[in-house]
Length: 232
Ligand SMILES: Nc1ncnc2c1ncn2[C@@H]1O[C@H](COP(=O)(O)OP(=O)(O)O)[C@@H](O)[C@H]1O
Ligand SMILES: [Mg+2]
Image 1 (tube, helix red, strand yellow):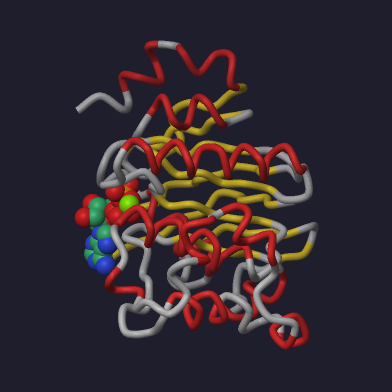
Image 2 (cartoon, rainbow, N blue to C red):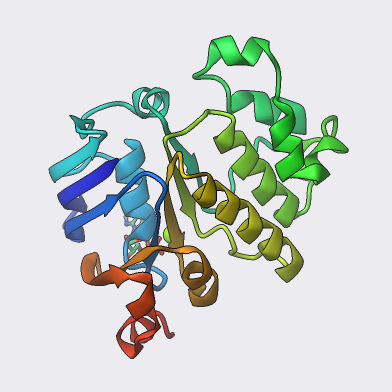
C-alpha cells in the first residue's frame, strides 16, 4: 500500500531524514517509534506532501506520489491526524468534521455518517460546540474522526496519545484496533509511548537521528534494542 524508499530531507544544512525506507500493507498497523526530535513528524509531513524531500520515493498502491501536493495525496486516500491535533478552534465540531470530507464532495452531501458517532459517542453531543472548547482528549477524537471521514486507504497518526488522559487513550486504542481488524486500510502510528504502540502494531520501525535503526515484527518489539531507542 505505502512504500517509502530512501527518503532524504534537510532543514537548511541539517540532514533530518537519512535514507528512510518503510512499508505499510493494507490491514496492517506499523508503529514508527523514536524519541523527541528524531524526525518522526518530519517524515510524516514528507508523506503528506507538506514538506518537500531532497531525494527518495513515496509510492501509494504502486503509484509514485513523491511530488504530489497535499490535497492530491488526500484525494488519493492518505489522511493525517497531526501532532497537536490542529482542530479549527473557532469552527464547531460539526464544521470540523465536514472539513474532513472536503475531498469527498459526493459523500459530503450525505452528511456525517452514523459510524463516526458509534466510534466516538462524545462527539455527537458536542456537534454545536466550538472545537477550541473541547478537552485535549476530545480534540484528539475529533481529529481522528475528521481523518476517517475522508475515507482513507492509509491513515497516519502522529503521537495520538501525547498529553491525553489514560481513559481517553483507552478509547483511542480501541478505535485504532477496530480499524486494524476491519482490514481495509493501512495504519502508520507514530509514537513514543511504547506500550500503546506495542498493543496495536503488527510491525515496528525505530527511528534515531533521522535513520531507521531497527525494524521487525511485533513479537520482537519487546527487545531492549527497541526500548533503548525510546528511553529518555
Ligand atoms: N521547521 C523546522 N525547521 C528546522 N528544523 C526543524 C523544523 N522542524 C523540526 N526541525 C528539527 O528536525 C528534527 C526532527 O524534528 P521532528 O521531525 O519534529 O521530530 P519528532 O517528531 O521525532 O519529535 C529536530 O532536530 C527538530 O529540531
Ligand atoms: Mg513529532
